[in-house]
Length: 391
Ligand code: HEC
Ligand code: HEC
Image (cartoon, rainbow, N blue to C red):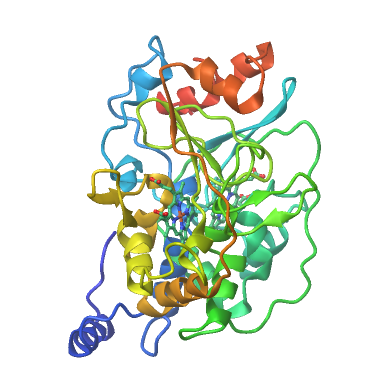
């Protein structure tokens, strides 16, 4: 990412140094609208889905297993994004409803390119797309978290995000259309709150986690009756919320958060841990908020691993995108978690499947992959064609 050394930015850096290196959100006085939008896009992880993966080094056409194709061993998630085409879209998400019903959703080009991006959209149209999932031509955007959160974004944050998207380099990149077996309706969120809560407060944390940042979705699961059990971690009885497939070509379902590809050279299942353990009366209640902030920003767990070393969190935790989260935002969230009441719930340890994709599939969906699954998740799946640079 390029840093522009404007006078204001330089002053902000000096101010930060003078105040003991606090990480200040760009929405503080002096921060520009574009900078604020860039900050929101960063902690909102837009690039994780909208920036295409680097294709160099891929063995094409795909003759090896997808694992060999990927060879993702660098722990830096950002290293896999094609920084020459930020936000140019085309990342496929495979959504499996059942053995015979699936869809493929490609993230879109959200650069200002007039032909293949959103360059011809008005500000109001971009905001409508984010809040209501509606395109200027009236078609609905297929939304899964965090897109489903954006209806709660406040007007000033939407304005900043639009300013940032407009500041991007236009990239000509036509992405494949998305396909679902049934139509998706657009939303109808009503008027947005004029301004987002600011400062360091539970209100700010609540707003961030409802409108932009995915902590709650990833660290929760649904009870059998469908009610959300927030922040208590994933559960094997719910294969949709709070469980992450690590590996190259992974099925996602409707309403599922996360990405189709996570940097892990092999197949594994990982459950989001119970965050209420750090809250009131929890077994980890003595962990200070600063340790949670460290986990959010650097991916170092507040808990040591079984050998007493600092536990390093998988990239799914998104800390590479949270590393510039402001002190106010990170502490708002950490303090909010410290205020939660402990709810006992053990999340399973990570489960490794190595190269046994069918084994993982079976464990997760309780069935061997069907013909439809093979077509979608097999060697010729859309994920692999993107890894080979086409489209
Ligand atoms: C989990 C992945 C994911 C994340 C994170 C994400 N998006 Fe998207 N986005 C998508 C997908 C997939 C589509 C296309 C859905 C479809 O085809 O109907 C999309 C569509 C859009 C569109 C509509 C564009 C069009 O041409 O239809 C806009 C605008 C957009 N995203 C902006 C953003 C912004 C801004 C952020 C961050 C604040 C963001 N997205 C974060 C996956 C994501
Ligand atoms: C895309 C899903 C995802 C998102 C978004 C996410 N997490 Fe996580 N988080 C995980 C997973 C999975 C782990 C376990 C990683 C591991 O064990 O390597 C984790 C681990 C953690 C841990 C360490 C817990 C422990 O017991 O060691 C903390 C703390 C945490 N997350 C807090 C947060 C907060 C706060 C946010 C929002 C700012 C957040 N997470 C967003 C998936 C996510």
